[in-house]
Image (cartoon, rainbow, N blue to C red; front, side, top):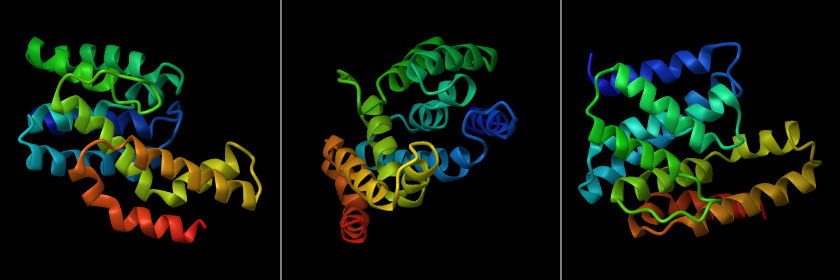
Length: 185
């Protein structure tokens, strides 16, 4: 089994556990989409696709296992442990850790590699297209009414759009972004 499949299976098994902070939905509706966008961007931008895909699957593992707070830090630690266990090369582990540590758009990161930028952007792209998930969070976790949820979702999607730095990223979701802005207006 290749390293990407091993990582994907590990993350999926963590999502299925009753202790997962986000249940299985994060695997199906977020991580799979992040991996999809990350792969497309890696192809377009000549990035290390293996590192990008491993990072995409692992970028939220800290949140899944320990919760959202500092999940980029806990996630990098989990990634290092798991990838070492899988016998992955140390220099590639370091790049994966940087991708995880710098994926959060809400944190002012100084991304040094195209792989780091791709993971950050793929995370934002997956959020832009997941209107139902954003609304679900607004209703269930934030306890907002319909008007508040609509406004909150619109603002979050706008923030994610504004976090995109790569033209290639905006090209991938421009139509979905515009549609979301219409639906949430």
